[in-house]
Structure formats: C-alpha cells, structure tokens
Image 1: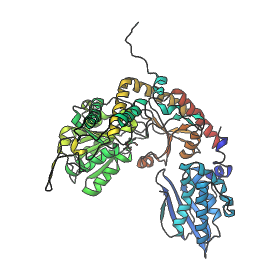
Image 2: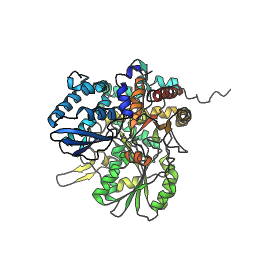
Image 3: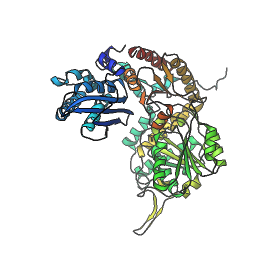
Image 4: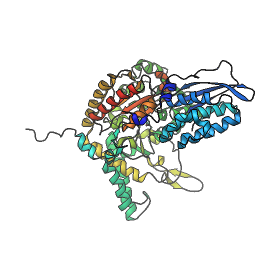
Length: 147
Length: 413
Ligand SMILES: Cc1ncc(COP(=O)(O)O)c(C=O)c1O
C-alpha cells in the first residue's frame, strides 16, 4: 500500500529509527545540547566527545519519529573524525539536501537516505533537528530550536 | 404515514454543501479527519463572504451611507445568531473576539487583573488546551493570582472529588475548564462543575471550542459565567471568536484594548467607554468573518443539534469499535461521556510517521501534542495521532482509517 513512501522510509531509516546504534548518553562528553521542535514536541539531546580538534564520538537521547531518530543516528556516524569547521560545512550541506533533495555532494553519501524528506515540508525539521542540536553543542550553546 | 417527521440526517447531502470535499489528494479522495483542528466550510459560508465583498461592503458602525449601514446590519446580525445559539439572555452578552485564545486572554487580562485579587486563585484542569493555560500563567506571574490545576483520572475524566477539594478553602475566584477535551474527546459535566464552583463562591469559564460544534449549549440553563468558542471549528471562517459573559461581569470589567469603536467620547484629557460589549471591541472588527460565521451558525441550526449529536455518537461508537480492534493500537482515555475526537498510539510507530503514512492515502489526521503538552506528560506520552469528526464525516471514512492503520502497523512491524 505504501510503496510510494519507500523514498521517505528507506529500509535504513526504518531500521535506525527502530534501533539506533548511537542512541545513548555518553558517559564522558565535552559538549551537549538539546534540540526542540516546539510544534510537534520532538526532542533530541546530543552528546559530543572530542579528541583534540576532532569529534571522537557522538551519542544522543531522543524522543521523536523514525525520521528524526534515524537522522540523529546517521549523523552520529557521519561526523566522527571531523573538526568543527568540517561539521559546520556538513550541516549546511545536509540542511540543503533536506530542503531541496539535492544530495550529490560526496560527503553526503551515508546521509542520502534522508533526502526524501524534501517532498514532505512538515517533516524536513524532523531530519534537521539533530543537526541543529549538534551545531548548538559545538558552539557551546545549551539549546536549539527548530523554530 | 406521518408526513411531518423530520428528514433523517443525510450525510451525502451535507457533503455536497462542502466544496472542498470533492478535492483529490494525490489522486485519492480526501478523507478529512482533522475537523477538531479546524473544520471545512460549507458553500453558504463561502458565498456569504464573497457576496459581501462583491455587493455589500464598507466599514461598520461609522458610515452614514447606504453601504456602511447595510454592512453594519449584516455584521451585527451575527451577534443575534450567537446569542440564539448559546441561548444568551441578550446580544450584549456577546463579545466578538479573534478566536478562543483571544477570549481567554481578554478574561485573564481584564477580569483577572481587576476583579481577581492577589491571594485568590484560578482553577483549571489537567486537560486544558494551551489557550486555557498560558493566559492564566501570565496572570499569575504578573499579578500574584495563584494557579491551581485539577487532576484528571486515568480514564480521562475530571476528578470531581479532587476538583471539589481544590475549591474547599474558598480562595478560588474563577474556575476555567474545558467543556470537551480536544485530545481525549471527554465531555466534562459542566452543570455539576458550575454548581460546585458557585457553591464555593467561584465563577466559571467554559472552553466550548470543541463542544459547541456537536452539542446544544444553553448558557442560562448552565448558569455559566463566561464561555469561549472559536468560529473556524464551527464551519465558519478563521479570525473570529466569541466570549459570552454575564452582563454584570462585563460591566465590571475594564477594556483591555483602546482605540476606535470602543469609546463613547474622547478628548485629549480622557475618554469614556462605549457600552458593553463594544468597549471590548477596539478597532475595525472582522466584518467579513462575522458575516461568514453568521452563515455558519444558521447552517448548523438548520441541520439541528439533535441530528448533529446523534451523527457524532454513531460515528464515535463505530470508530471506537474499529480502532480498538487493531493490534497494537491504544485509544487514549476512555471517558463515559465522549465525543468525536479520538487520540491513539500505535505500537512501534511514532504519531508523525503514522500521520505521514495516512496522508499518503489521502487521510488527514493530526499528530503531536495537540497544544496540550502538560496533558501529554500527565498521560505519560509525547504525542498521539488524533482523528476527529465533523458533520460531513462518514462511516466509510472511518473504515478507510481503520483499514489503512492496519497497513501502517504492518509497515512499521
Ligand atoms: C479545546 C480548545 N480550546 C481552545 C482552542 C483554541 O482555539 P483558537 O486557536 O481558535 O483560539 C482550541 C483549538 O485549537 C481547542 O481545541
């Protein structure tokens, strides 16, 4: 019945939405921030452990839909080993992809399953919320809001 | 044969009155199950507003010319219709506002800051819409009026014993509670709520945003002090709402907004206020919306609340039976007296994902916290999906919802 929704709910999104690999609070972390979507009540708290300039590990606690949890989980993998500047760049690229569907850039490879959200205006924020939280954490700010 | 028996509720005929129901969503029939958020508009409402703009429009209450006089008559007629709808004693009991939210803010800012005194309390319930919570928090923070919250039971009903206990010390000056929950579908026992409050010296404001759509409300029989509703849920336009209040309360309340239309005389030194209810209606009102709401009220009155309530009851019963048979689906709340608003969760699927999948089949439901975040916490939930019914909802649409939800369940299994 929902075959035409497979672009949005690719298998990896269903899997990660159900059983995220990084869905936990880190025992030791250098930065954290919470992202809230006040319109729908979604919330994600992101924890970052650094190793010098680069991010060593990201974990998160989230309540939300399959899209937001899968997005947080894929993000946690995509940013490992990256510096703050590289993450800022990746955040911009990801946000652009979520809005336009254009995920051609090589660094977006593992995040491309989320490109489908651009066709669902009300769901774009689900995908970008974890990135907003990460951005706030990297900037040393406690909170981010999708609004 | 009885020739004068009333025609039965004919949903096909009613649907023909709502042009939007002919729309297709991605090639599929629109199944609109989100009327509790905002209802669709019948042709008569659309036509009334278009007619005014095309043939009979000018500012109201001020022009001496033909257009202004006719427009004033057309607009002011809504006040009579609202008074009739609620069985208010007089048209002057009806203050026209922007929506329910504005009605609560008006009472909080005017009555709350003048008649209520620090040390007194406002009592609301755990199942209020943010519109009947945030204005009281603002009042509490600005003026030192206490805010009390009456609990609900796990079934989703007002806990009447706890409610009465919260009134016992006599400090509560105003009870403000919903008449029908926009999340659980619960109808609250307004008569008892009001009797108990009055016995403890408290006034009562009812949030009739949801209930006015489905049931006949008689403010005099209820002896309610204030009542709010919003036009767009009653098949009328957005941008217009209602505050009903007893005359002596309106007389005692100061205006909140100053400007044109609300004055009796103005000089540089001082101004005096217009009569009730106009002193609360500063500025050019929602003229077209008033004309539209008037048409909407006349439309539902012509159908009749007996028929409307019976239709809602039939749909609700069917929906509860169909939905509760779905594996992994939990209906939130099981109040005794309930209406056509049903919240549910589906195991393994977040409400937003459920809503997106339903939407793909043309089925519109709401998902989220429904502007009642504290209630969600009380229920131990983050969000629910919610189906809600209107005049035009059919049994087949409820079947479509249930059948599709069963597929959604499989998709996320
Ligand atoms: C119970 C209840 N109260 C108040 C409101 C607020 O209505 P409005 O947004 O039109 O002011 C709503 C509608 O969302 C509602 O369902």
